[in-house]
Image (tube, rainbow, N blue to C red; front, top):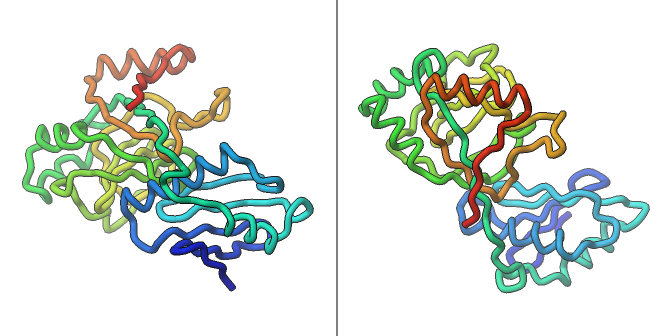
Length: 244
């Protein structure tokens, strides 16, 4: 069973949530529509909606069935104008992530170099020379699914995934790049590591960034890594941010 709002489909997701599906492909344009709907519903709350979770191409809408039923919520959403002109364009936040590339922190950098035909220096320059859109967070708390990686860096995942990847590792998996915010099994090619904590449950705001923000990776050396790591441990390090 599904409802439609123009090109948007409404799909049930269990008995306390539904999905607003904006399309089937993954693109910046489609994701902008998801962010627009997310922003609109944040600014114009609907009684009964308890949580909103944006993804690549859809928006999960969680609700309290004691406050509003599925059909009533569908009716409300069907009457809502989710066009770009209604959603508006909010300023985007850019979070700069310091990364020590190569060496013990980027043990797969030589393998990425062999696969792509690029030198390790060229890989670092290409990887740190982009602004990456965070499409969504998932897999682990604070794991960013990023868009915008240079296609010259595309490298297949490991044939045999590691049983434990260290916290803060930065890797490439196929056409994507990302940060492991916690130690975890994984099969991405590791090219560096950040000393900061993308996710820290002891912080006032546990998440360093959100879906819709951007990430830029800043190369640092081991001396800078050690300095930042000490500040992180003391709780005094503040990530550089910009608004665009």
